[in-house]
Image (cartoon, rainbow, N blue to C red; front, side, top):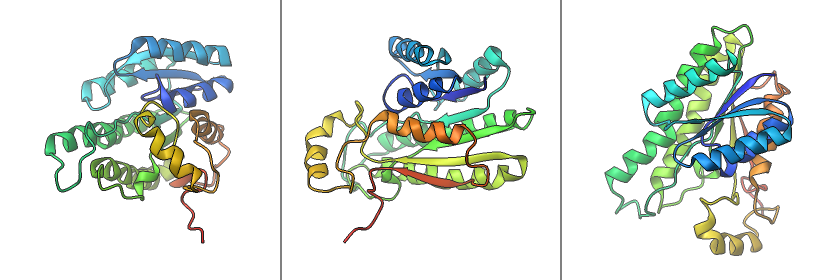
Length: 250
């Protein structure tokens, strides 16, 4: 079976993606930054679902760790058919854009945008050397277009992922490598746990036509559908998994 590298997959959305790929029998590289036990738990869940998995530590913001992730993947199976750029961080402090500081901005942009950009570059180069090329999926956010003035750095990073998707899709189309963006809405993870009451209220008031929290497996199912190769005449496509939040409804 083919091999997928899913960054930031020890928990949350990444874990949901890894498990869904496991259900289709994928070999999944479960990338984590700090919590090895969580990564091992995800590996066990992938195996239980029907796939194979290994845990590989690495911080996508660091060039040497990006190379480590790719090397570990190739050492395991010899090829990589799917890259899912999921790893990301929230602002350390939600600060008004008139008060936000550069250190927080630099850290977030390096993890959320620079890291995926150069990991994609490295993986694409590898895919070009393989008989079986592959696909690349970027996990962004409704924050790519919905402005939150107390976390401008996060919004900018996700908007940047949108353009990154278009750039790599255009560059790699002739080489039979497809690139997609999956754009989650409000998803129940530890990242959104701190604002649960706020979003409980907003969802109940009609934040999105589908009035419930999204779950990590909702994103996983979208990734799984793309990974099967069911969209061969699409690239650079944005798939919203947001309960309909993106629609303008009167």
